[in-house]
Length: 203
Image (cartoon, rainbow, N blue to C red; front, side, top):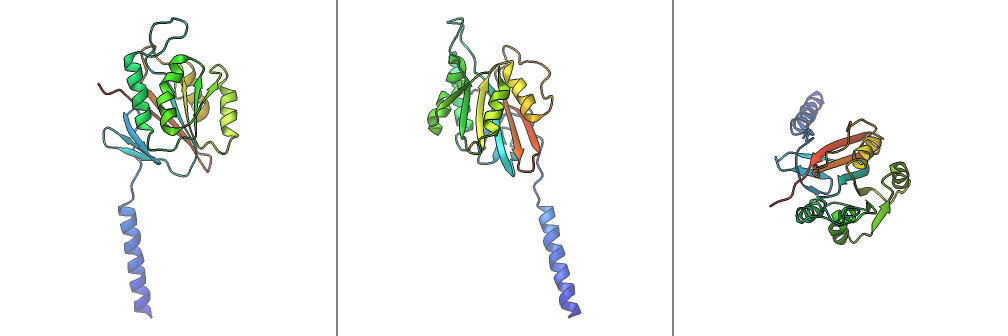
């Protein structure tokens, strides 16, 4: 009997050691370039990845792509901006998206229209000057687990700060900065994880 107990302890200890030895630890992928999001896994060009576990809600925050100069009051996107919109759709192609929100401007709508086509989702307009109302709407809807929100150089960093509960950004994005790709997800236990990433177009 004693021998059986001893062997059992050795087997269990071996299993625990093997499990601990092969446990994958999350790497810090902040400021890296995201290449794809597949299911709950975020992959970067460097080969690192991050697994979003026990997710209650996940937010993908981006600024609109490169804007044109005409018309001055409500311009569309440049050729590079249209390529960025395609890149965004490709990154999110293989993961869940339940809602797509855009301020009611041509440049923001065009940034996510390719993604909306892929996901067969209508773009929902929101007031970028009233992000609290947007946050309340999304948080109260249990059917929205994963949402994409496209905004502006001032509203996107402010929204990131609000959703994360942290001062991720101390100022607005530079006028020529279009490559921020911010992921914020809330776990079932209430913990919030913020991942400030980048994404670029392929020439």
